[in-house]
Image 1 (cartoon, rainbow, N blue to C red):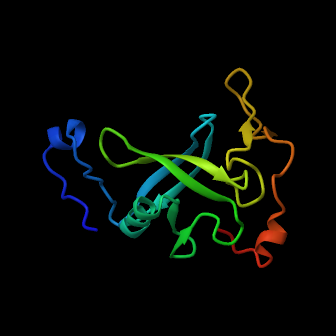
Image 2: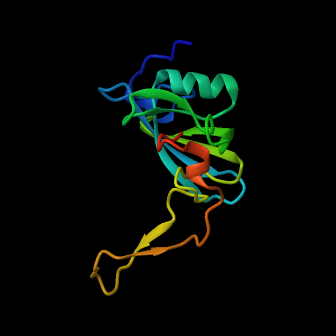
Amino acid sequence: MDFPQRGDLAAIEEGRQLQAHFDAQGLIPCITQDDQSGDVLMLGWMNRDALRLTIETGMAHYWSRARQRLWRKGERSGQAQRVRHILIDDDQDCLLLKVDLIGGASCHVGYRSCFFRELNIHAGKTDFSLTFLETRKVYDPVAAYGDGQHD
């Protein structure tokens, strides 16, 4: 699958064709959101192959910058993401996947969302402490991954 070339500003910002902007490393950021609740689940990265496979299979695929490899969410843990919608922002340089969770979690440390902590701020000041927003893990990451390598 060859993705369309980027056109002029009007075509990018208000056109009716996907003209995704992949950065110098060939990546585009991808926010993933629960289709039912609207909760933000994670931020990942996609290269052209990850986006192509996501479109073709209906399952979320990403590019791991740390491991330098393509991966399908849930390939080891079973915590997969079935894609319901793929949205692109106005500059076409960020994707938003709306997904159904298979297995109930998105976070590789076992929580439902990767955004399970909140920074404590009081009157514009912080001690950099975090409050946990989720109190229990959905699955045991040690049992899922064993070796510490996650999907």
